[in-house]
Amino acid sequence: MKKEIALDLSNRILNIGGVVLITAKFGDKDNITPVAWNVPVSKEPPLVAVAIAPERFIYGLIEKSGEFGVNLPTREILKQLYYCGKHSGRDVDKFEKTKLTRIKAKFISAPLIDECIANLECKVEKIYPAGDHNLIIGRVLRVLVESQLFDDYLKVDLEKAKTVHHLGGSLFTVPNGIIDVKKL
Image 1: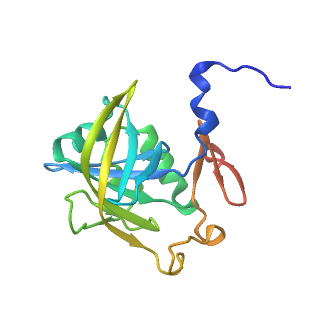
Image 2: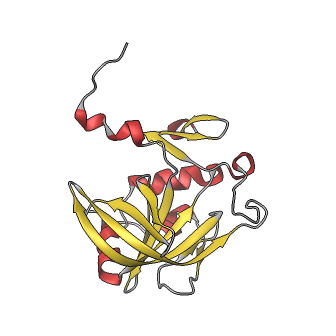
């Protein structure tokens, strides 16, 4: 038997994709925010899409700089990931508060996150309005991965990597279970 749910909860049906940490910088301000709405959209050229609400601080940094980083976190930094989603970069330096390590990118000014197992450097190709979020398409310029977690075909060992997937609210899942970040 099926039941109908409220439309404002419809995103939770598809919201179990991997969470990434988006980084951006403009001028002397940088920021980190978690984004569960992300997807590769092209192999050639390599393009990714992230959905971010225009009122978010990081959106302005991306729009002004024309670039962003995509960082793949693991369970080991789940508390920091959650913190970054609950606080605005307008008010706090999230790198300082979370003790996440900035690493210099090669092609973009935005920092990458050392504690993440993969990092992508992206230039904005196009931004599409999409309801209360905008879809930002980025061209991938460079990719870094932790060599011990990815094989030669870039297949990740999920048991070792413990990538994070958002279930909604404070609930996340990793390959071997569900975690309520509020209980960590």
